[in-house]
Length: 55
Image 1 (tube, helix red, strand yellow):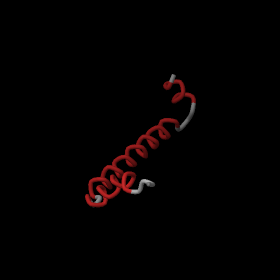
Image 2 (tube, one colour):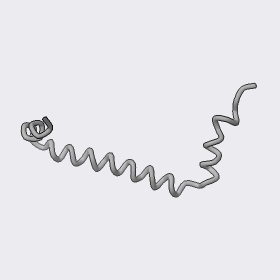
Image 3 (cartoon, helix red, strand yellow):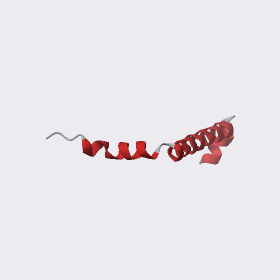
Image 4 (cartoon, helix red, strand yellow):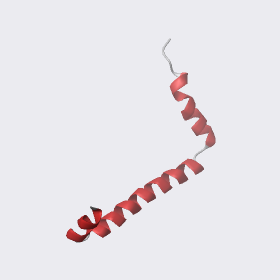
């Protein structure tokens, strides 16, 4: 099915590679951001939903 899609539409292979690279770059950047994020900030964010509960 995908082979027919690639054969019939010119430039479909470029579209697929570009979308894959965009997807990969997004997750690599998010991973790097999480690795360099301050650990105290991560702990603060993890406690946020539990700290502010209405009485």
